[in-house]
Image (cartoon, rainbow, N blue to C red):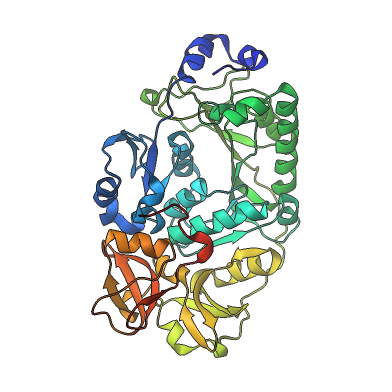
Length: 451
């Protein structure tokens, strides 16, 4: 692959030849297991017909694979048992250890397609709220799908601009900004990124990143943390923007002290601030940059929130039995949603001020005159499995279900049943005897041939 001469020239001389050679190699493949399905780890590798080829040092429950399988044809992926994520970006887990010790209110600002948000949802302490935001509606829909499949309570998916969030009354202890960038770190995976690269585009990206930070900074609490990351190597989008955040807002950088054996590079400039570069010739993964910054302590006016005020009398009693105890309910657009009781005020406020695609756990939807369980309920770790008759299906039946085909269920009771695959919830179906009507979301269906 030929790289632009201007790109080659901006690479640090000490790293240039080795990095360019590494960019010509095949990308690594890595996955992160979902701890909500701890028993599924061996099942995943068996289902993928893969061997684990080493663990990701900075992220527990993540491994490299010895080859790239056809992930789409694995039911366990659609059940939220694992996420296919580039290993370098999982370094976010190490940063979290340095800034989170108890429940927080967190925002993943540029969250699609969901790699870092699923990681945050997995690692944030119990009782935390995560708002996963994406400005582009089409990408926000993909984010919503992935977050629903991940199945964690206390998660919302929104579609707002940084300015809208910054001007709201919402305040966060932690904001992650994986900023849109020129994509240099993805060059060996994305030929389009190579083709579109230019110094002019680098400058445009750097300016847009500063605008994003400036717009969202008011939503970060005093003493709160900002995780700034890109998938680039150049100083304009990385070190220079970190220095800009420090100078403009008085932010302090936090040393993450990674294990030297991980071979992560520090600052590539003479400004020796604690930042972290992942390069393909140094670490197993793609190019990635991260810095953890802390907002100075100081007086900050807390804006008045909007306490939870929903009429729960219209929520059918049966729907409340489909989910674990400890939730409050509300009806919106012919759907019943559940919020963890401890987070109901914060989530309600966010849902009132932002455009929420996923305002909570969707428990039920109105079909005709009946309330039926929503697919999101099947994916949620809060599901009360005992509330439904369960039917175990084969792999081929699972794929047919994910393809949105009607399936036959032998000896299954009539009515709505919870389908499981490998004893893990797959989704709901309505068995009418000679066939079972498929209740999987049409827009999520596998489009490949499954024969």
